[in-house]
Length: 114
Image (tube, rainbow, N blue to C red; front, side, top):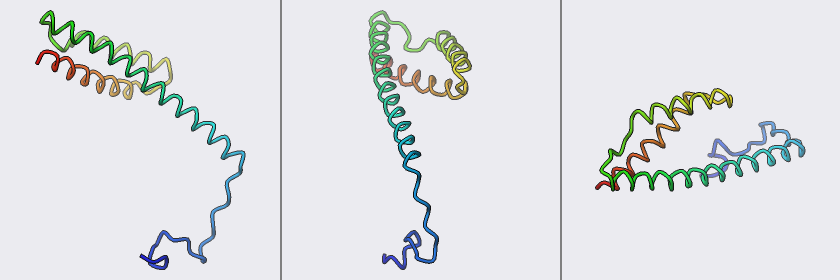
């Protein structure tokens, strides 16, 4: 597709966007760097959490315990919702996040049994 046919092409009759302030770009880069560090920490924390839950899964399988524990899951969800409120995080989001993790943990525990 030629530049003339591409509606996204920069056309001379349209005003160009102003150049962002270098200080704003520097601040944006600093914030993104912090986000990248937090994302890395989250991945490492999740890896550690799953190392622990895999040990739990092996223990449960060895002792013929069920892969899921609905009472504990309910307590954990309530605990995480409370922590989310204290941290000014949407508790519904925190619950969805924990439910996602719990479902993955149960899947691992069921695999140990199989």
